[in-house]
Image (cartoon, rainbow, N blue to C red; front, side, top):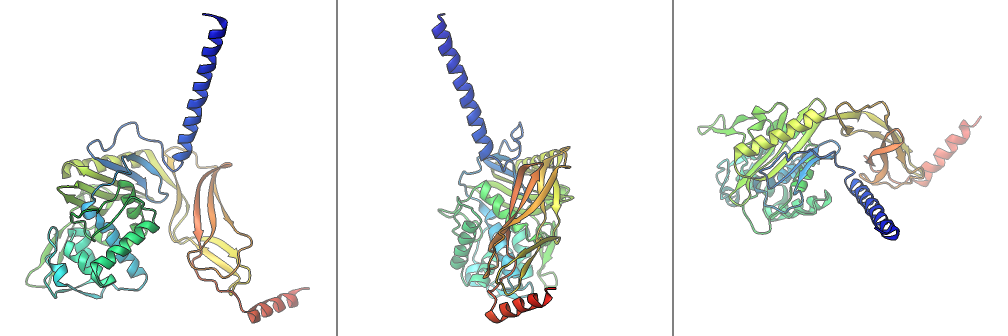
Length: 398
């Protein structure tokens, strides 16, 4: 081998090595919000699957997560999310009566056998949707909130876009087979995570059996379609699904201590396999990972000064837990967080407007960033308010 040829070979090897390093660095950057992937397929029989930390949104395991598939009754996660948000906004109340239209009563598939004109409370309808996967109850609630199923479906798609569910399109509220009705495992995990911000929904999703019309002549026995809430420690939701096209699907959640995970499987061959693979995903998460809590729900985070605002400061209180996902055994001593915000924040400020970030560090390295939004509207102060504020400060000068 000539010296010139040997040098050329060596140069090629160096270039390939550097190229591989650059590719690895690129992949690492793209997957910054993903945990270290498990060495085995946790859901070998699923067409698509994802395992996610509910608090941080960190993906622990994924498989074909962007494949658009029919979700069957998992659709009702979005239906329940809009119901919970309507309750929070005061648009409806749990004891409100919901009347059953002829259209709602005509739904086939899973149902609670509502009769035309029959009334149930929102509380009872939620129970029928969460436990029995009632297609009729889903339509009745859609009509209660939006006036029609079509209008409610529009609300579902708008909310999906707001959540970043970019591979989802809903056609109905219950997941009955329909052309162009699809989503992905990733998008299901996103909306499931959002629903779990309303943890009171587990009052319905975690119950294994109950009754509707209990005091009537025709009591209706409900048995939860998600058997994991009975057989898996910590499981308290969320929603099953099945059609001949979608096969057996499940978005499930379980919580142990302060660590909640969400597992989604689509296209499983049967219920036994579906439940077994979700169980394996849960077992992996709880065995390998832990949540290190930084801020608890309800904790005071701090306050931010607002220039020319009707109120001078915005007090920030955590409306959910803030944490980071760590491998079990990882050192937490160097983990800290800082509140960073715009020092020149000026009124007016709208509720929900971004006003800063919580930045989490391990040493000097950034682990995670959380956006902070204003919890209140802050109108601009009137000239009279500003004058009084300035005068009071002048008189305090010594």
